[in-house]
Length: 159
Image 1 (cartoon, rainbow, N blue to C red):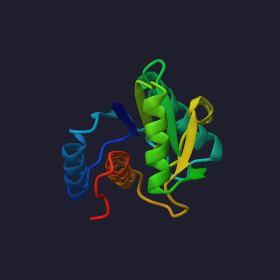
Image 2: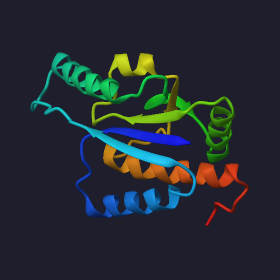
Image 3: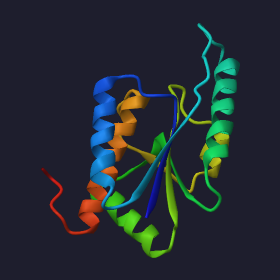
Image 4: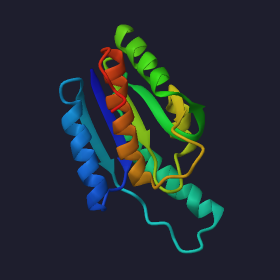
């Protein structure tokens, strides 16, 4: 299965990058993983709602340009549905059985995702009602995708 993560911005924290590298390694036996970083836009100090909206639109354009045609798009969105790890595994197994060639998870920047990205999404998923650094979400998502593959294969996953 091809799994892609499209994320706004670069991860600058070493500890997060180390965690991401660890889960990229762990995922190799299960999926062809691709991580695409799209450019983040500068948010002006004391930005107006219109300026913030324009930043999201521009970032959204970058995201949508990186989404392969025909991919199933999962937008990580605070207002999305919350699933358990088992729910994610079940959905991924269903997508795999349905022949979805590529699953793309999208992580927005600090302001979130544009309306265009949210409307293109096949699924809107919330990892938590808590707020996380958008760079940390990448690590949390990869851990959950790894856990989902372990669950799908009937392997221990709770360690």
